[in-house]
Length: 333
Image (cartoon, rainbow, N blue to C red; front, side, top):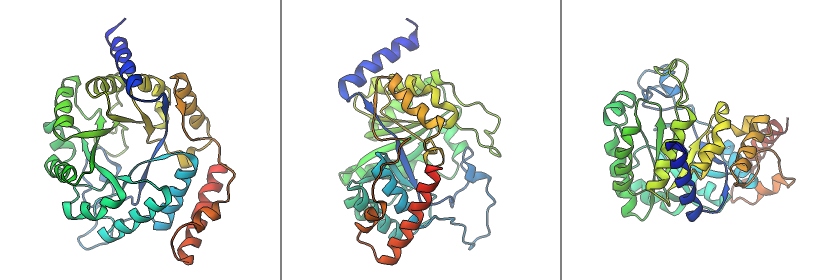
C-alpha cells in the first residue's frame, strides 16, 4: 500500500469512528458580488475595475433574493455553509436584519464570513449565528502577504479570540494551490490548535481569468486528498468541507474517503438536475455515504405557503415569491 492510500485508510477509519456515514451539500449564501478590498490576487473581484472614492460599488443582491434562496436550501436539504459577501457591501444593521430572517427560515443558527468582524457586532449577531469563518486562505505568511495584501491574518485571529470569549465557534477557509506545500501542514495544524478551529473549508485553487493565477494549474486530487486526510487524522472531530468545482466532481469519492464531511462550491442553482449534479450524488454512493437532501429532484410542496410563514410585510413576501418562482423555473428547465 503506497503512502497516500495508507494515509487515506487511516483517515477513513477515524472519520467512521466519529461521524455517521453520510454527506451533504452546503450552499454559501452570498449577499453581494463586490468588495471594498479587491486585491486578493486569486479572486475574480481583483479583476474588476476600481471605482473612484465615494462611488457606490457595492453590487449587492436584494434581500428578497437571498431569502428565496434560503427557502430553497431548507426544502432541498442543503445546509448553509456560511453567510457571506464582499467586505463593506452591506451595512451592519442590514446584515443583522438578514441574519434574523435567515434564522427564521431555517430554524438554525448560521456561520458568518464577513471579514474581521468587531466584537460589538458579534455580540449583536450572537442570537442568530453558530460562529465566525475567517478567510485565512493560506497559513504561509510569506505567501499570504502576496496573495492577500489588504487582508492580514492578525485581525482574523483577534476575531477568533473574541468569538471564543462569547461562546461562539471558529472556522476558516483554506485554498490549496496558492504556493504552499505539504511542509506547510505543520503550520496549519498549529493554527487550528491555537485558534480553536472547529470547521475548515478546504478548496482547491480555481484559476480565474485575469488574475495572476490564470495560467496556474489547480492542485490534483491526490494533493487535495492528502491535506484532507492529514487534517482528519490530526483532528478527528473537525468538520471538513471540500470545495468542488464542476471540473472536479470525479474526485469527490476520494476526498470523502480521505475524511471530508461535506461538499460545497458547486453552482447548484444553475446546475440543478444536470449530469454534473447527478455525478455528485453518484460519487457519494461510490464512497458508501448516504447523500442527505437532493441535487436532482424538487419536492412537490406549496412554495407560496413557505413564504407566508415568515414574519414579513406583504410587499416583501410578494417579492420573495417572485424570486423563488424564478429560481424554481430555472432549476426545472
